Length: 112
Length: 107
Image (cartoon, rainbow over all chains, first blue to last red; front, side, top):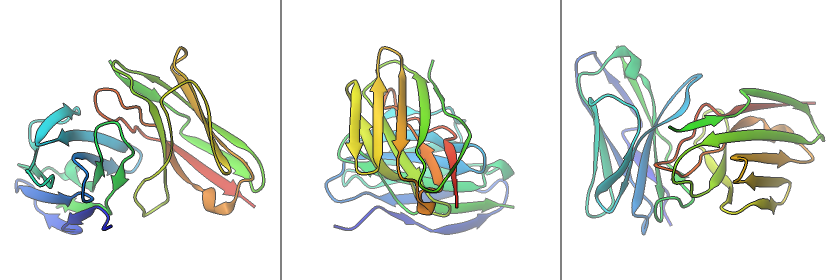
């Protein structure tokens, strides 16, 4: 069974631009969560989706948004990028909310 | 509100036993998980406690006390490869991982 895939793996953007990251969960998994990881801050929770519905949202500004499609694939969007948005963005999928999560390799976003 | 507390760093020697504590505060608690993340890698699942008590998986054991909002991960016979960050996300109102505990195993 293929693991969680994230695209792109690396991305360089400039301040003010927007970016869309994609996550394909493991087949059969309907729950997808997104995290931002920066040195010293650990894994900060962004959102959790299940069956195309956002179940929970972390404490991030409205510039961060996401969605989930009917095939469980998910995207997250960051608008008006700031230097502080530079981070590793991890996506994790699970059978359902609260179940063991399987992480993708992440997308390394650099904002210049 | 929600909170999660773990020690930021723990150091131990090879072959020793180490315990990483985790206290949490949340509404709608469903269980406490433990994940391991090596530098440059993605987090991987170690264990899950939904009920009070001890769960053992090889060299690793995880404990939960829901009445105390407390859990711990016990690593026995430490090996160099155990050097990593360890997270204890709870599953209330969305998984919360926090900053984790950086474990360094020395020879």
